[in-house]
Length: 126
Picture 1 (tube, one colour):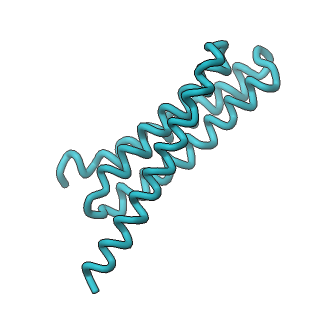
Picture 2 (tube, helix red, strand yellow; picture 1 turned 45 degrees about the vertical axis):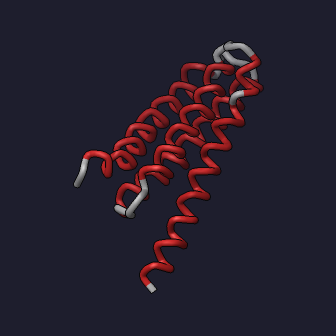
């Protein structure tokens, strides 16, 4: 398997490991330190990170042709989306909330590109 073909599996596994660690840290280490709003941001970040980690692992395991672009969009979107929420929860500037949708948009675009490629690949095989 080519190194770039391993990217989705690598990124998904790494994001999943970090998601578990950050979820546990939020539940046990931050619960008494953050207000309800900040904890909700943290939980949202963990949920989106884990769902997209699972998606990336599945994409990597499927070994689909041309999966690097959707994988890169999903990974970058997840880092931006979850990262800005984690930072805001920890007291980062509120303007990061304006960047969060950029990450969400990249995640959506990653799924749309994957769907488009799946449709196009299926048509070529027919």
